[in-house]
Length: 308
Image 1: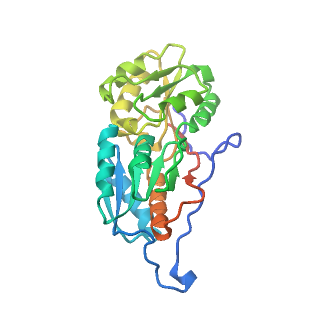
Image 2: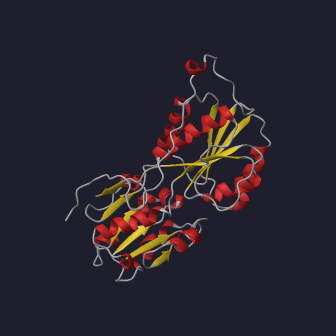
Image 3: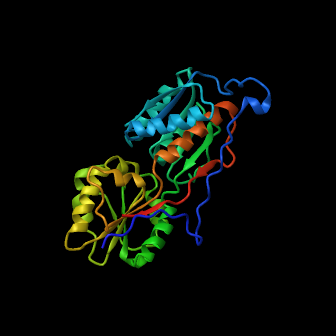
């Protein structure tokens, strides 16, 4: 039976941290004209491992402009997960004097390359707080708490009648957070996508989950999100088949797939990406105007849950 769509606040048992409110600088408050950029340069460059649709570009620019951002913004996307390609791109950016700030999106992998290669100040949107020590070039960013949210996803699925050992996890082995996510997983069976970021394997991969797995959590991997139309199609086929498996997606954006998740067979558990992208835009304007590391280093969003 289809469940009524709903949105709820974070569970009182394990609440995620709320996003700190970024204060907009106001000339009225200071009595002085708008201060110049604290970082030298005339441009902001947003670099991404995956394609950035116009909706996310608009969200980033909305937060950036609303909080006093004045420098031009360029987007370089769909760079992929290959570390050599990413290193080459950052070495190229290091030599462009007009760049005041670099913004990385599309997973921990691009953060780690920037952390190792970038001589430009940079901020990041990441799925989880990085383990390694950030370089002096890193000024902060936004965390989706991607795998930490799995604890809350398991709790929500338990409320829907799925025992933890009946909930599987589908991961991308090419993701930089795959090992850490697996170590923190408290549910049942784990399966990894076959091939090298090949959406053609989704249907077979999902069909391999055992009969004892009644629900599947989709890992919050950027490539999965990029290929959400094909991933949701594959999941819908499994959900409509004899096993009738239930799916839990890590972002509200999966509800906008070309053929949406089946009603009564899916939960969207995580933010709509436009919200962290807008928050990232606010962080970019603050970084440029102040030139100092954010405190707290990462801003985070509340839990958002919709049962379809």
